[in-house]
Image 1: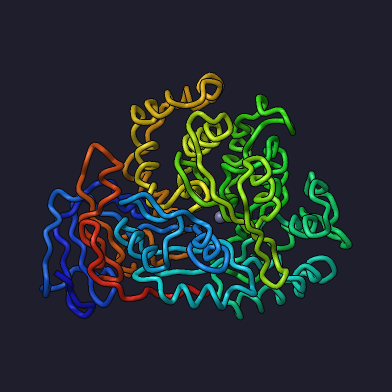
Image 2 (image 1 turned 45 degrees about the vertical axis):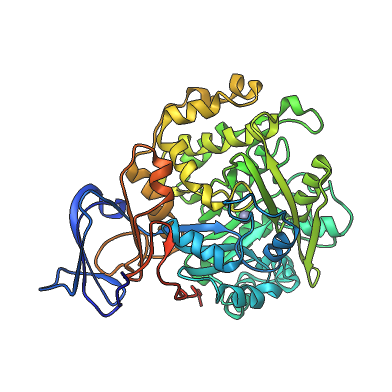
Length: 497
Ligand SMILES: [Zn+2]
């Protein structure tokens, strides 16, 4: 039964997982009023027993693709879903319904061009339940690029800040720094490393990254620079990813979908493809200013969509699948194409194993966020499967045994026995993404936090447990119960300036 925001609600006796406060399964009450978690009150208007239930803050997806022109193109290009399955690229309404039913209460679209921000906000206004924000592809804007090449640090910050404000964005994202300019100049293979000057400019990809990170820091934006570096998906790209990690010189930066940037291998020889995680995670573990999300691949059909046209063109050329290139006013360079990941494919099996290797070798769970780069690596509704792969070694081993034999033989995953605890799963799906995205009122269950609360039935099958929360509260209102939406009021737009 639905409740109202002005009532005092008592959620009694749940088993809380609130890692931000060091609470790991202790039984406690939560008091809720006016959309927030509050101190214990004298009396409650409504009381709900959560005895025997697992309680976590609402889930936070800090890297997803849910709105704007490339998502719309992805909807147009997809085949109808199998009966009972969600579309690879759901409508905006279904996106909100599915996320809410999954216990997620905040989502960010990680790649919106400045020219597409208006359209993205129109769509996001229709997204039910969740709080939402956009990351702006500010470095695809020509005036920003000119400022990065020629301006002072103040001028760059002002130019970037003007666009973040006008676009009501939450963060700045850079996709394939400079790469779209090479692509549009017909110089597809010329940006082999980050030192190559961009066509017609005295500016390298590395300088672009460092100056953007400085501008984001100078502006005091809540989220650090969000980085999709060059050479996404290409064999041997671990080298440019390591170079990227070194480019920030101590400034905070977030590396998006690191899985797609962590490969060994040479150009044409598929047999040399493999995991380049080890040197990258070694550097990452020693540099606390860096954070990442994984962009895990899970097997099945989905839709790839990226602000990196070069990567999409490459994927289309190796798979032979028709693709769409989409440029908003010639700004940026979006690419969209369907993809099916298969266990027996050498490359896909490596991608699956590389993502899990990252999850299991990062030492500090507070610097890593769970993502599939929805819908690129997999649909967000597959998160519960991914959580089981992390928390249940026997389940992971069964899946590993079905992979292409070369990957079974050579992947370091064969020897990784770590299992995520419930608290660690709570960290990578809510507490850490809230902290990394710069949302102090979210991702925890302390007094003053937004009352975004997800209630699960404990189950040894973690996939079943996380797929169907018993109750989901958003700002203190019961919004979903056993997979059904109970209220669909829109959430808030998160704008940084
Ligand atoms: Zn992405």
